[in-house]
Image (tube, rainbow, N blue to C red; front, side, top):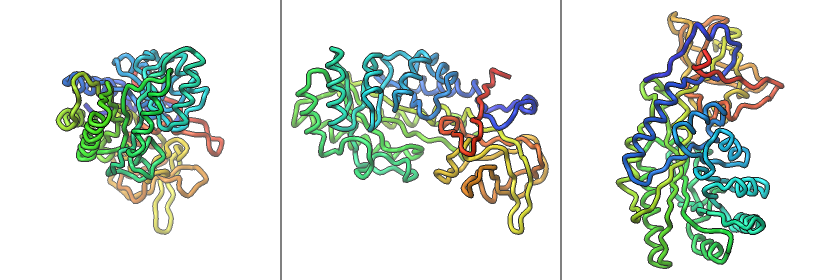
Length: 386
């Protein structure tokens, strides 16, 4: 199913705003649950950083999916949406004492830990509460990924995780503690990955590491967390509204050598929510330059920063014009030269007041919006509101 736009209803809503197609979101959640359920011991956690809109989180919770959090605020958002603490994992290189305490008090399932100092902080705070914190060590597998350099996370040069060669010493530290229990290993190599070979490479590295742990320590951990990273098709959102979860889960099932009873965890974000969302904006002015024609819209880089931050592609559709195509740069009103959504894009001839949809914006859109130039944050409208 493809995303539906109630264009007539949009005419009475002040732009810019984020629009979410609830039917498409639910269909996507059903698909990920169905494909994961084909394999025993597969668990999906939604990466809240992609979009923490409370009403979307409630729908995720209703689907029975857990949460992957990278801040205390995200832990709180998950719990407030009804996601059980026992389905919450908490990652991040810089967890503060306050965030750790919040998570311990809530009784979350697992901390994905990334350094010895962090483990020591968790031990101290857990001891103060008389509890045992479950942890999974995030291992930096030094596996490259075919994606933008800013969203590659699995190389030795990245800030994330414990380097492959340091794992043995980190396990020694954990085993010396009374209030931290090692239950697993955590990995994540990057985001917006469409080539299954990247995930196969990760599987091979995990297989090597598991064999080494058995040989040297006789250690088999009950949980393996492979992170997320599955991408979407920004170029053809209607042709591929739901990612290929079948191929994604099958890749792990066929290439990762799990020990009997081991549970496998996934942290999917973008692939669950990106295609159900769009940034809806109006053309404010059409400006003819000497070598360019500009559509100046009322949404800006503060509403959707991905094109400015990553030079990211988003399909842009004029929902109210069926005129012959012209070539435009679509730009926003923010006082920065980087406030550009696209350059030299063909789209129907556009006039002041036309309604445009910037597609595939359900992930890292509303969540990354900010108030630069004292601009108001965009509101969220769900299809069930109209």
